[in-house]
Image (cartoon, rainbow, N blue to C red):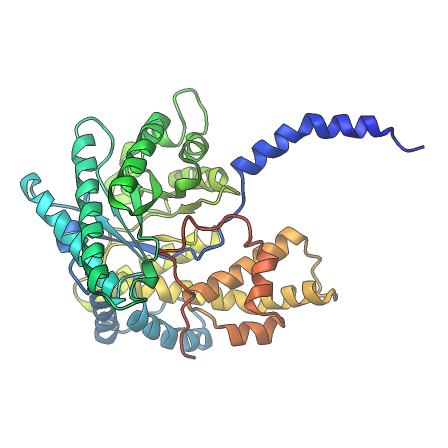
Amino acid sequence: MPLPEDVLAELDRRLAPVDAARAAAFPGDRTTRQPVHTCYVPADAVVPGLAAAWGAAALAALDEHGLPDLGLDAALLEQVLPRVRAKLAAEPVEDLRVDAEDGYRGPPEREDDDVRRAAAAVAADLAAGTAPPSVGIRAKSLEAPTRRRGIHSLDLFLGGLSTAFRAREATAPPGLFTAFRARKATVTLPKVTDVEQVRAFLPVLDALEAAHGVLLDLELQIETPQAVVGPDGAVAPARLVHAAGPRLTGLHFGTYDYSAALGIAAAHQSSDHPALDLAKQLMQVAVAGTGAVAVDGSTNVLPVGDRDRVHAAWRLHAGLVRRALERGLYQGWDLHPAQLVTRYTATYAFFRAALPAAAARLAACVERVDGGVLDEPATARALATVVLRGLDCGAVDEAEVRAATGVDRTALERLAGRTAVPDRGDGGTAEPLTIPS
C-alpha cells in the first residue's frame, strides 16, 4: 500500500524552507560570458586606445621574438596561431581593471588627477566602441590607513565615468552606447581580512550606484590567510561569498601577497606553489553554484628583454595558464601586453584540444548512442560548458562545433544549464568573439 498523503505532505512542509534557502544561496552559474583574464593597468598608465595598444604591442612582441616551443602539437599550433593573431587584433583585452592599489605608484597628491584621467580614457573608449567587453577599478583596501582614500578614488572614478557618459550621450547618435547599456563597472576590493568588511562595503556600493548611475559588480581579492581560514577555523571564502550576495561576480586570488603572508621565500612565490593550491581549491568550493567564479592570480615574470628572457617568461606563463585551466580556473591576471601572446595561445590550445572528445561525448548524449563512456547529466553539463567557453573567447567557432556535435549554441546552453542566474543588467557584457578560420 502507498504511504499516506499526510506523510509526504509533512515531508514537503519540513523541507520547503530548506529548499528555499538553498535556492537563494546557490542559484546556479551565471549565463554571461566569463573573460579569460583580467588585465591590471596602473591608473596613471590608462590612456585612450589602451586595449588596441596592448594588442599591437603583443603582436609586435610575437613578430620580433617568435613563439618558443610550448610543448604543443604542431598541427594544433598551426590551428591556434592564426586565431591568436586575429584575437590580438580584434579583442586583445577581455576585462580591464584600472589599478589604484598596489600597481599604482603615483604620489598621493597626484592620485585624484590620475584617477580622473583614467575614467575619462575608459569613457572615451566606451564611446568609441573600442573598450574591452568589461571594465572596472581596483581601489585600496578597507584597512584603516587606506579606507577613506580608497573610497574617495572609487567616487572620483565613477563620477568621472558618469560625467563623460552624460556629455557624450547628449550629442551621440542613437545606439552608440549599446555596448554599455547599463553603465556597468566592476569594483575589486583587495586584501579582505574579515567578512564585516564586505558587509560594511555593500551600502557604500549602493550609495555609489545611486550617486553616479553606474551599475556595480563586486570582486573580492583573496590574498590574506584570514580570508582563507578564519580565526574560528571556518572556511572564510564561503562566508565572504554569501555575505556579498548577488552583487559578487568573483573571488580573485592574490598570488604574491598571499605567498608572502605564508612566509614563502620570494624566489619561490609562484601561482603553482603547492601551498597556494589549498586556498584556490577552497575558493572554488565556496563559489560553486553561487553565480560567482574563482579566478587565478598573476605571474610577475614579465616577457621583456632579449629573446631568451622573453621566451623563458612565455614558457612559464603558458605553463601556468595551462595548469590553471586543467584545474578549472578559467580566468587569471595579465600585467603586461606581451603576456597576451601566451594567454591566448595556451587558452586556445586547451579548448581546441578539448573539443574533439567533448564533441563526441556530447553528440552521444544528444543522440542517446553508445559513445564508449557513460556520462551523467552533470558530466554532459561540464562538457557543454567547456565547449561554450571555447566559443566565447574565440578558440573555436560555431560552424565547427555544430559539425562536431550536431547541436547549435542554443542547445549547448541548454545542456550547460545556462539559464539560472542572469547578469545584473544587460550592459558591460559581450557577445562571443568570432575569429576568422
